Every structure is written in C-alpha cells, then in structure tokens.
Image 1 (tube, rainbow, N blue to C red):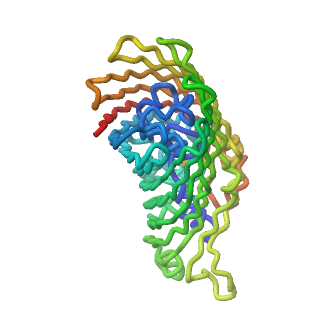
Image 2: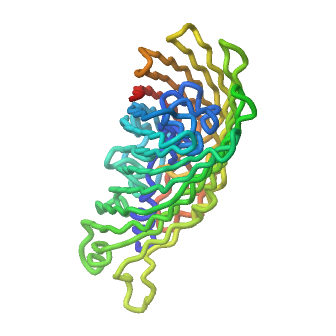
Image 3: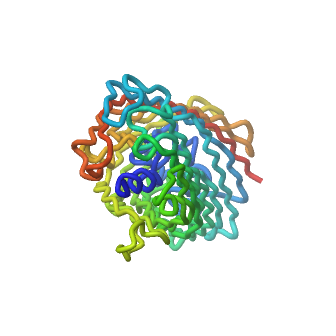
Length: 418
C-alpha cells in the first residue's frame, strides 16, 4: 500500500496532461511569434515579447516599449476503451483537460544606442486536468492543478555593429494541487509551492539588415517544492499519509536556434530549432518526516524513475506584408514527445504533434500595433498501458486507455511605443 500511495501522490506533482508543447512545457509567450508557429522566434525580435526566446534581440527595440497579451488555450483530450483493475467507471472520459488563459507581458527600455534593458512576465505552466472521481484509473490521478509565473529581468548590448549579446535572471514561482484515490478507496491530495531562480543567455548576429540568426539558452530550473500530503486514510497509516513533504523538481534547459530573412518588400521567411533537455527529469524523490515503518530510517517516501528523453522542435514560417498596416503570418511545426509509449501515464499521455498556425498583425499608428494568432495542434493517438510501465508498483491497480488529443490556441497582444 505504501508504494501505491506514494506513487499516486508524488508522481502527481507533474500532473499536467500535455497542453501545447511536449511534456508539460508551454509556448505562449508571444502572439506575433505564435502566428509563425514560433518559427524564427529566436531571431525575430519584432517586439519585446521575442526576448523570452533570445534576450539579445532587445537591441532591436527602440525607445521604451510595452507588450501585453494573453493566450486562450483550449485542449481537447478524450480517453477511450478504458479498462482497469481498480474498479470505477470504464468506457470513455471526455474533457479531461480544461481550458485556461495564459497571460504574458514584456517591456524594453533603450538606455543608449548599444544597451537595452528588458523585463518579461509569463505563465509558462498552467493547466487543469480532471477525470471523473471514480474512473478506472483514479489510483493514478483524478484532478491536477498546476500554475506558475516567471519574472525575467534582462539586459542586451550591441558589442559590434553585427553582434548583440543578452542575458537575464528567471525568477519562477510554481504551485500545485493534485488529487487521486489511493487504492481506489482513500481520497489523497498533495499541494505545495516554491520560488527558485535560473538564467537565460542569448546572442544575435545580423549578416545584413535583412538577414539574421539567433541562439538562445534557458537554464534548467531546480525547484524544491514544499507542501503537504493529506488523506482520508485512517488507522496506522494516518500519520504517514498526512505529513509535510518536499520534492525536487528539475524543469529542463532549452537551446534554441533561429533564422530570419527578408526576401523582399512583401515576404519574410524564418525557421526554428529547439532542443529541450527533458532527460534531466529522470526521477522524482519525495521526502517526508514520517517513514511509514519503524524499521525504515530513510525519509524518502517514494522514488519514481521517469525515463524522459530530450526532445526536438522544428518550425518553418513566412510572413506577407499585405499593405502598410496589415501583415499575415503562417507557420507549421513538428513537436516531439518527451515520453515513449512504455513511459506514458494517465497524468501525461504525451505524444508527437503537428502545429498549424496563422496570424495577423495590424499597425494602427506609429506607436500602437496589435498581433492576433490562431493555432491548431493535432497530436498522434496515444495509449497508456500500466502493464508496460515499470514506474507502477505491483500493488497499483492496472489501467488501460486510448487517448485522442488536440489543442486550439488564440493569442492576442498589443505593443505600444512611448
């Protein structure tokens, strides 16, 4: 029972069914870049929102600018052909992933001809997943709420006429609340939060005024979540199931390469490659004060090996200048899953996906502009079969489910130059 309970409570801390990027990573930081499926985001630098991908691009921002926006993320995730040994409902589960709004904001302040300061505010994680309370896989997870906010002060400097360098500190706060039914009988909840610091680095090289490349790096974030585990379980296990806990959660580093080329007065072309180092997420150790057994001295309640892999993201995009005020954007992308079939769980039934994006930019006047974007993401069908997954202990009820996942995203932002 101890192994079952701890898997249920602790693997849950990452319980975000895939939203709009592999694993539980989100891409929602720029409506303009979304219109191109984030192709060329690391080299784009069209407004301050692109600094999330490459702080060096701030040197292209003049004066003082503010960019404010948000993305409405509407995932559609359904589980079919559900079966399991834990009892509860089988058949189908609809609307597993709930819609959410992810706000974003950024600003730039030009100090002189070579130096620009910037500030970014994003919600890189923030989704809700919810199964029926007594579904067949309730021992593996019912409800998952995960929210985060990241503040990034940045600076960039033009070191030569062609080369710019940038850097920043990422201050990220995460909060989670997750529920499940231990053994299909006892309501169990885990909740906690933490604030930690990482960094980002970037460089941009402009071969000509019409051609540039960029490279951006965001460091691994080593979060130490502190919180509480609560359960309705009574008897000798009560104190073990109701105690303070903590967990080390390592969010992966990312390396991005982007290219931008203005073909003529009408057309712009761009490409993007991103490597996300999910292999750093190799295991979860949850630690508590209670060991669960008098003869056990270790305070590690659970150790779950995740076996995630590094992923690749590829994108191609183009923009067309319709007239002096309107610009149309297009993009397609391939996003690789962070988990293989044998490592999928009901919490994160992740799979490869294809992006299709369209956007419009409107220049209202010299100071004010708007960006709008729509993206449809089609994920490959995914299968979760606990018999194939070595993370689950022998005491954990088995579950089988087939998933169909897709995502629709609407992005909107405004940019104002003072």
